[in-house]
Structures are given as C-alpha cells and as structure tokens.
Image (cartoon, rainbow, N blue to C red):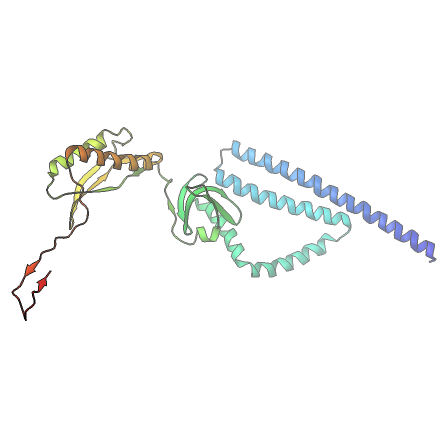
Length: 281
C-alpha cells in the first residue's frame, strides 16, 4: 500500500471513529433524557398507586441506576467496543470490587431490609445509628435525616439498621411524662387539685387513655409527683413545654413551693481540748 493509500485509510477510519463518537455521545445524551423521563413517569405512577413514599424513592433510584447502565452500554457499543467481552470483564471486576466494598453491599442489603420491614418512613422522627432527626430520603446506600436545627445528616443504611431504632412518629398518640417536686410542708390534696386542674384545662389532652397523676416518691428534699397525660404525637412538645410553664404559674398562685436540693448542717460544740476549741460537723 502506497503512502496515499495509508493516508486515505487513516482518514476513512478517523471519519468513522468521529461519526461513531458523535453517535455514542448522542445516544448517551438522548438516552439520559429518556431515562429521566421514564424515571419521572414511574415515580408519578407509583405515587398514583398510593405506594409508600419511602418505597417510591427507593425503587425510583434503583430503576434510574439500571436504565443508565443500559444507556452507557449502548453508547459504548456504538463506538465499536464489544459489550459482551466488556460485560464479562465488568462482571469479573465487579466480583473483586464487591469483595473490597463489602460495607457498601451491606448498606444496600440494609436498604432492602428497610423497604421490606419498614421500621421508619419519610417524615418520621427517629433515633437510629447514633443520630436523631426526621427522615427525608432513603437512597440505595444511605438514609438522609434532617435534625431539629435543620442540619442534614447522611447515615449509611447498615449503620441505621445495626442497632435499636426509636421511632417517635410510629403511633398517633404519645404520653407526656412530667415529674414535679414539691415541699414536704405542702398539702398533698392541694397539689393534686392543682395538677388535675392544669391537665383538665388543656384541650389537647386526650380523655382516653386517662391522664395519670400520682405522688411517686419522697426524696431527700422534695416530694415527687408524676403527671402523665396522653396527647396526639404532633402536640407532644408544645404540651410538654406549656404544661410545665402552667404548673409553675399555678404553684406560685397557690403558694406551693418547688424546693431546690438542700442539706441541713448541724454544728456541735465540744469542751476545750488541749487549749483549743474543736468543732464537729
């Protein structure tokens, strides 16, 4: 082959490669747009089917990842790379990577367990994995929480499922647990009347289950009372704070004391010894 033939061959192959690269890029761009469209349609379809928001987001993320794999393989195939061999290589590499990334696979498995057993859902306030917050999203490998002061915390699913999970939003009602200390000189009947009045006057307190107001303990410096009304979960903190404030206000009006920790000190005087006075406490 003469020099001109080599030049023509190189130009021909270069032109084909350029066309294939442009076609591969077009496949990727259009395919990515189609994947986003299908992802959006699938999300809307699942929402119309009234599936749990947690399940909708998790399945949507998996569907998007799988469709993007097909788009990438189609683009690579257009360039001329044999996808069959590539898939075999990826499979072998995936095995090695999987062994190296056992933690990530464990997080994926934990995400699947979240979907199956549903210990929490989007919008629940939970304590899990050493953090506390409202569930915003559950990804394939991680769970996103929003704290009360609006911080975003991303926790691996494996960590979320590795210990106890406290879900404060699981039930519609919660019990407010208050402990109030009064002085030993205060009339227990008056204290009971005041506490019952505070609970009865709060319209957010549920009649069933009935509130529980009892004298629970006699401590070193005060008599402890428990006040345990039931409220809707959404009213928990407002009732907790406002009822505590109202109890203090009514105690002040009724002259009921709220003692602070104190200790009586007795001083004994002994006869002089060796010319010095000694005091014993």
